[in-house]
Image 1 (cartoon, rainbow, N blue to C red):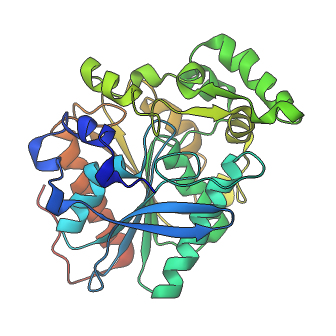
Image 2 (cartoon, rainbow, N blue to C red; image 1 turned 90 degrees about the vertical axis):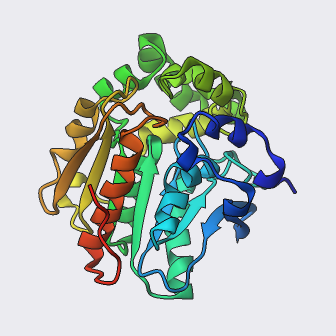
Length: 323
């Protein structure tokens, strides 16, 4: 079975990160395999039994768990947190079992079940973090599970909103014709047909460095992934267990990259402005792209997530990061 120790793609991608965010062999996460239904889900873990908080990291449709570990999992671990980055079925190194095509509903269920599995190990508070599509997934999972102390998103995109579809799809044809066609096809025996995620979305705006983008696109476990029409349809049509007006599970933080050319701030605001029953905070990350490679945004993200964890869990034995 392939591990990230044997995969070169993520190392090429992390080469575009500041040196302090690049993982050396002795700093790499512990790799675990979690049996979940017919799948063997890969987890990147920085286990720390003395850590007061666990942070579970969700990737988007152009990244994977190891790319979450480099930009946030490892930095938070160095600051005293336990972090777990999951490769959702079809992405990263998770082994997908035979059967029906993976749907976005499976991602939400897997996230909720992972929370339950971690709760079974111990009862430490859990905060969710998600990048890109993973941001909205933190909301979907929290709404379904109800047992987390906070959620952090790098965008909150409600794909049921036509404006969101129009501005995040590859073009208007994919938004207005391709999306509905995928939904129709997903109800037929052709549901397992695949297409590159880069043809459905603005994957060309994943990062702002052209050389880094080339490295990302060659990774078939992340930005270069081909997904099924069943997954695409379920992703764009998914409805949460709890609509935002009724959401009262936990506080929310949006860490918005200031130079995000794929999902700018106003798209997340369409969703977040509907949330009234829990605190919602926005932190802008200077100079940072959609998948942030740039300073000072990366450091600002680590500080913001650390301080958010302190605030929502009321822990007292972790020193707040200096701003």
